[in-house]
Amino acid sequence: MQGVASFGFAAAAVGGLAAATVTLGVSASVAALGALWMGSIRVVPTMLRDRLVWEAAVVGALALVLGAQAYQLADVATVSFLLLLVPLFAGLLAPLFGERLGRRDLLGMGIGLVGIACFARPAPDFDAEWVGIALALLAGLALGLLWHQSRTLARREWEPWATTLAQTLVPGVVGIVVVVALGVQPTGTALGWLVVSGLGYAANTVLRLVGLRGLAASRAALIAPVSALTASALAFLVLGQVPDALTLVGAAIIMVGLAVAQVRPHSTP
Image 1 (tube, rainbow, N blue to C red):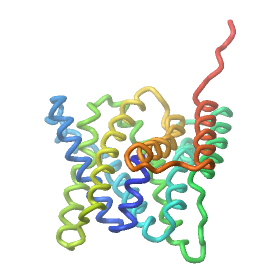
Image 2: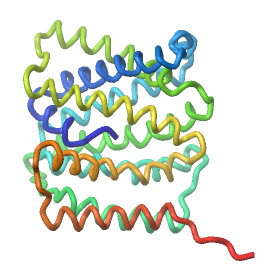
Image 3: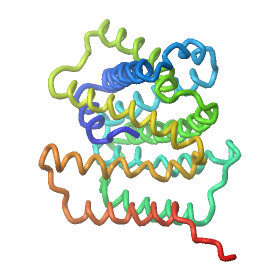
Image 4: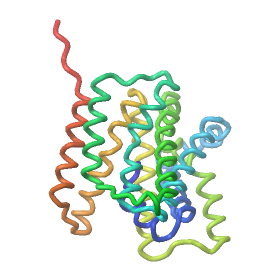
């Protein structure tokens, strides 16, 4: 997932539809530049005739809208925690796509979830925030599904920038038209954070498509919580926000879980 921090705080300020559509619009613009650079933009009309591209576009846009709306209805830390549960949702969906998680994968996921809890420290008020929590869970489920859809798209070996453009172009354009028509477009600092979020979403989608060419979605999704670590590193470098001790402990536990899941013991001859 793209940087949870930039998207989350902007979404909490400007609302679900505006945050999602600006993120998608910026992502589509960046992807168009990338596809032009790679000389692959001419194949985008062909991709738009593929049903799976449209399905992935709808699921991705839905995840952004639900997640952004959740940030308005629940605590930022709680929503961020739930959105970082992508490995869990991808693992639950794995049997539907012919995948299976091994024992090391499950152990690594469990360790990682403990790290995520320490890192995000959700403190939900269920009576007041249950709608936002439900929306965040649905957004996480959609993101888990998107990993599996991206795996199928990646195996078709289309150029990643063009594939990203095909997924974000129509939702981004339609959404921005609606936002402008309703007069709810973000400005100022919120717009700046959403531009950063859109850049991250485009890069994330491209890298995900490249990585999923040779890796099962349910295993690759175990890497998703690392986005929280990069967001914290950027917050420290750009904003001067120093993480506290529990955040650092959570980050270390997340990395241990990732190592357990991804590192395989060498077979003996």
